[in-house]
Length: 271
Image (cartoon, rainbow, N blue to C red):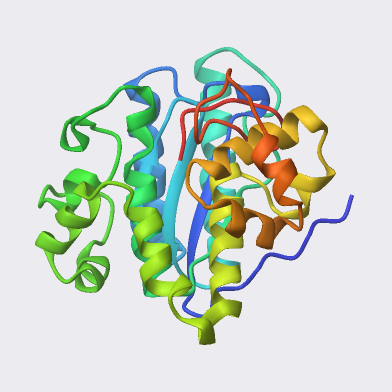
C-alpha cells in the first residue's frame, strides 16, 4: 500500500505522535519509560533532531521536534523499532507494537507552536493529573528548570519567557482564545486560519486527512465532531470539514470525553 507524502513545515518543526497498535499499552513500567527517554536522547544527537517538548502516556507518545522531515523520519523509525524490539523481548510478546507509521503535523506559525506545546503538556489532565509539575513523564518540568531531554530555550523565547509560558498554560480555554486572537479577527488571514484549524483538528483526532471525518460511519463521525465541538465553534468545524451545521449541531455521544478518540476507534487519554 502506498503511503501519503508527509506535509512539510517551512520552519522544520513537527508535532509527532505514535500510538500502540489496537490501543495497546506501550509502557508497562518506568523501566520502559526510562529506556524510551534514553533512545530519544541518543537518537536526537545521532540524527540532529532537536526536541522541543514531549509527553508519554500509557499507549501513545507526543513529541515536538525540530529538524528536516527526512531526519525526523530516520529518528522516529530508529527509536520506535529499537524500542519495540526491546519491549517485545522484555515482556515476552511478538508482533507490531506501534500502530502504522508515526503521524506528523507541521507547525508553521508561532501561534500554533504555543498551542502545540500546551497541548502536549496537557495530556496528563485526561488521566486525573491536576498539577502538571507533578507529572514525571513530560517536558513540563524541564521548562521550569529541571534538566532533561528537551531544548526549551527557543520555545520560551516565543512565549516571552517563563512567565509567559506559565500564564499560557494556566489560562482557561486558551486554545480557543488563541484562535480568535491570531486568526478569526483578521479577514486577510482566512486561508492561514483554515490551515491552522485543519492541522489542529487532525492532531486532536489523530487522523492524517480531514476528509476522514465526513467519510466515517455516523457513530464515528459524531464522536469526532463532539471532540471538535469541545475546542472549536460550529462555524469553524463546518468550514474545515464541509459538513452542514445541522449535522454538527446534532452530533451527540455521551460515552466519550473530549480528546479521547483516534481514527481507528481507539480511545486514549489525549492530547
